[in-house]
Amino acid sequence: MLEVGKAGSAGVEKGVLPVLRDGVVVARLRASNWKEAATAVVGEREWVLAEQKRELTGRWSVDPEGSARLRARQTSMWKGTWEADLEGAPVSVSSLSMWKGTHRYTGRGRTLAESGSTGGWSPRPTLDCDESLPLHHQVFLLWLELVISRRNQSAATGAVVAGGAAAAGGS
Image (cartoon, rainbow, N blue to C red; front, top):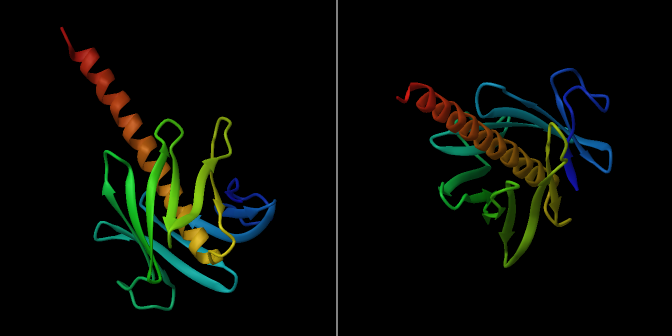
């Protein structure tokens, strides 16, 4: 299982999120706090992860800007479904639990991964993956989970603020 560790822990530099498998760092993720963007180092390869034209994309840092090897786009906000393309392999993302914010990733007629979280006060995404899925695909899907959880948290915070403002302004 992959897990996003605490920033600056497990021997990675400050501001970097370690991606852990059984407590061992297998990748490093430097995610932006202000936009849906990150850089990931998986093995010796650096990936640029970003939102472009309503899609989340992943490309090698040496690839031309605007290109993408990995893609994901939301297909239904209400159902929480996404479609991904992992270097030509289509993957469907469906919600397992709206309450827990977990997802199932399916492709090639089988389950490729399921998400979860570490729990606690500051839950971090986890991803239980089929071992046949390359590590850089797993890291991309884990970053997708991070983006989805941030979007859900932002929407919930906005709903609370809007509800509070409406209640305070009502007469």
